[in-house]
Length: 471
Ligand code: SF4
Image 1: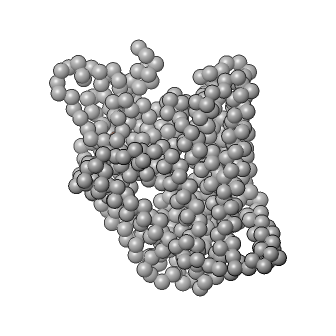
Image 2: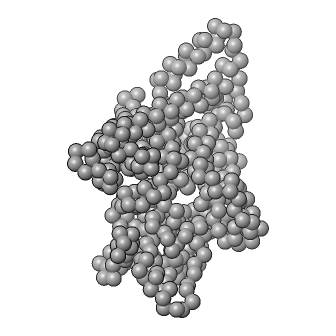
């Protein structure tokens, strides 16, 4: 029996936990109506929280998140939803996408009556997850999406409108938007590789079901996952529809990170590497850094003085509409063109410097070990998913902490928790790198790529330490 079949064979005698998971998966398949009801409740709540605050006056200084809809929506989206959905990917895969996501539910719903056009090649371009993540992250900073409700309507509402538009045109009963274009799909796909649960296909059972001669069962997978050959959780939305299919598909446990070691090497590509090194560990760091960075202030001072000396003062006092650059004079919160330019420059330089440093460290470690190939470089980069995901989670949860602090609620043991998470994610990445390097190397040379990954983790940890403890 091949290694592939062994890895994906489902034990005929599962323990209690695995049995419970199988039953849960089967229940998800049987109770589609209940899942759809949940989705519509989430859709209704989401639409209210996205749309209504944008038309209300900004909350007064005395408002609290429990008595003001705008503050409640701000906390729901940025304090709870975004950081904890990201965390849920690592724990239970993309269950959010398949069971709760309002955009996924809406694009799939309208797709039932779509034009049914074939998905064009430009939509399937593999660079979209990286480009969409970078554009959304940077634009969100330009308009202060975490602080004000109107930009939320533009960013989230715009994304939802595009999801509906794509659903109305391409595919039938499908989630073409989610599969190829959603700005967070790439990030979620990376995080889901770490999850200890996934829907898994028993290849032996699948083959046996073909030999029995009966007409094979079939499931219409909305995010276009080829179920028969599915070997990971990256693209699967955990909707449960295929649970029990041909007695071969089951919700089951797996070793956390197993997909990164055993499967990711076959599919790792430059765009995923770019998303990890330059997106999550670069652009996201710059986006969280700039408003707290003394380097940003110093650089802006230098550029401003240079502009004044050159007699070019209009960038210092020209503003833009709120949907281009933050513009709330009543809150004393306005970005000039100089601020906007510096913001873009700061995030760009951070991404290039950090991403370039990570790429160089990985490449040097791999080259010194004598195991260099481009495919191995991209596979090794996947070992940094825990460090990348943990950093973004900590950055996002800083918004949670800030919002709670604004209402007089302090998070206990915050520094210790941040330290433990950073150290734990670094350790996880090192273990993954060790296991990946073991696919190609033995003996002392196996340590060299691992040292490269550890060095990346230390650099990333220092970048977050600057934000949390040094500045
Ligand atoms: S493979 Fe498709 S149908 Fe099966 S659980 Fe995943 S998303 Fe649902």
